[in-house]
Structures are given as structure tokens and as C-alpha cells.
Length: 244
Image 1 (tube, rainbow, N blue to C red):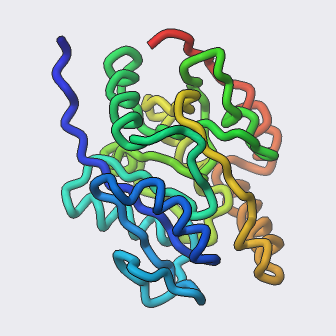
Image 2: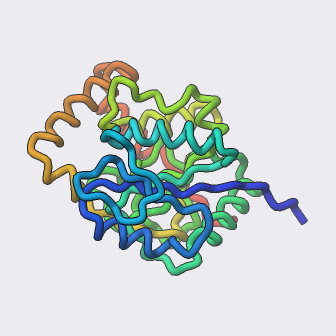
């Protein structure tokens, strides 16, 4: 029998926007260990948050902060959850995910980025749930709920978002770098979430427009002027895995 991996997983729910959204996903996980709500200096604070940041670091800035903080605390993995996502899978969610991740690494190899499948995705077809197969190896994943191997993040040079703290496109670049460095990027069809896209960002005047411009500059600098075509091609570079 293979030795059980020594994972130490932190779950960090990023709070910004409606406290009721945060409470919904936190309520699904709060009975499990090492679950933290990080209040990103939200206009409406989250009651009982683990920590409230002194200023809004936006998504990528908060991810970078969390990666550094939890790695220093001895965690091996960080599950960084948007507060406007919630699980359609039954509990115990963390026990299931850790078991799934261990099995994936036993059979397939080291996993740098793991993500649950989503019920609906207007942007990333490689994230859509396919119950006919166990999981999907993808070139990159959406940043709704990435579970990161912190050794992987360190090896590939960190989050790399100093020029784009709002974060649009950072998820693509982070997971794509992991894939290119030989780490697996997997979408798990046995763990399912639903995401309310732009539930908070869409309520802030001009935010989506500014974020889209920042994303275009960010990805253009890293992937070149044809980055949109590259992304479309990469979205189709998936391998369906039926047996684990």
C-alpha cells in the first residue's frame, strides 16, 4: 500500500462584497480544519474573519499575500476560494479533496494546481464538469477555486502579479507556468462547484473595464500580442482521464 502523502492544506476564503456570500461557502467548510476567511478590507466586514487586511489587495495581491503567509506557516497546499463560489458536492469536502489529490498523485504524478469542476462557465470550457470521466488534465485553469501546491508556486517563480493586482489573467499565467514546468494541472469532475461570475466586481463602476485592460497588458507582455489565440488553442489541449 502506498504511503499516505503528508499534506498540510489551508483553505483561504477571500471575502469582499456581500457577507452573505462568504457565509454560504464558509458554512459548507467551517466544521473542517484549517479554514480561514481573509477579509480583503471589504466595505462590509465579515463577522468573525480570521484576519482583516488593512487595504484592499485585490484578488492577485491577496493570493500573493496568502501564498507567502501560509508557506511560512508550514502549509504544503493552499486552496484559495472566491467567496461567490459554493459547493454542489456533498460533505465532507476537504476529506474528499485530499483523498482525490492523493490518488491523483499516486497514479498520475505530481499535481501543481488542482481545481474542482464547475457547473457553468462562460469563459473556460476546460473547467466544465464531465461526469463521464474522473478528471481532466488542462493547460490552465480558472482562478475561481485553485488548490495550489506551494512548492510548485515557489519553483515557478511565485504568483508574478506585481503589475496586475486585480488579477484577471493571473490565474491563467500561474497555472500555465505550472503546466509548462512539468506539474499536472487537473480539473476534478468528482468535486463540483457553482460560481456567481462578477457578483461583486460587476457592482463596482468601471472595475471590469479596468481589469480587462490590465489583463490584456499583462498577458500581452507574457504571451505576446496573439495571446487570445494562444489561450483559445490551449483551452482545447485537454486530456480526459477515465480511471484513477
